[in-house]
Image (cartoon, rainbow, N blue to C red; front, side, top):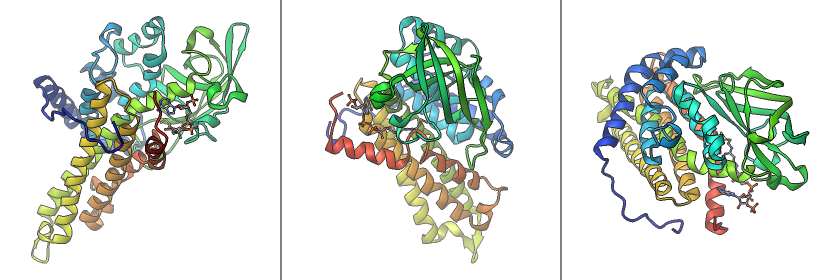
Length: 391
Ligand code: COS
């Protein structure tokens, strides 16, 4: 498909099962997430109890296939859930859906045995796993990873540090990307499953963030950490591609989260503009306000459709690098714009913690940064246009 070719054969109709799934997630977000969101945000507290409830009702690990004990939901069904959870609170939602990011490398590159060892327990109890890619000096530039994995007496020995790792302080295991061949650049990166309890693994600090504060984001260090060779995912040197293929699949989920945040801000803005009276009439009457709301509505709709398209393509078994980056870029920037405009509509009240929209604006900012900044998405899109890859 070319960069501007619209997909054909798309149906916007949800099946009864998909409607029920969305309703389950919506109700969960309304009853279990929204009432506690401000408190978790204020305390920057990991939402262990909400995660346990999400696990209990089957909203965690939707991507794990039935043969490993999971529900095996499609990418499209996963994003239906993702939008609703983030509508509740994107900080809490990120804590829940980060298991998808953490475990996808195992699903993509692991052997059948590795999948049974690492994925099945995630279904049995609310265990967390983390995707440990980013480093203090290697964020956008994944090929600059400095963590090393050296083969010694049949084990790999890991040394290095990781930064901004979601759920790192809570995870049972990490997928760590490390260099097995420094000379080979990105072709020298490999991926390993590292149990959190391994000797030499240090969760360094819980980082204090602007938004999505309910998500635990921590730094990690590895000091002479021995990892059995059986924990390597795929072959040596395949780590970079495993990371890229993972991000192709997770970016639509992140995009759905951005849509959920934008939708929440939109709903608050509409309600407020109908009830706030200035100059003797609701401010919704003013074109200056209702044009803002009209743009919000249209952009959220476009953002959702791009997200649905990316997920749909994945479900067709197609490579969705381009469409995932379209969705991630557009939804993140839309969430930032919509939440900023919602604060504007609330005026002085919008800037106050007492009202919900300042949190949404803080939360939205992270969508333009994590899982590849909006600039990296543009870079991916431009490369797909000018230098398309075959696989
Ligand atoms: N799927 C499969 N393979 C891919 C791929 C993809 N989506 N994207 C790139 N590759 C392959 C390329 O084909 C190339 O293969 P060869 O080694 O066979 O030539 C290799 O990977 C290197 O690709 P490229 O030259 O494009 O790599 P760059 O170092 O220029 O980096 C970007 C590419 C910038 C896109 C990548 O580093 C990136 O995505 N950065 C952002 C990382 C990110 O999202 N971090 C957030 C942390 S996770 S919360």
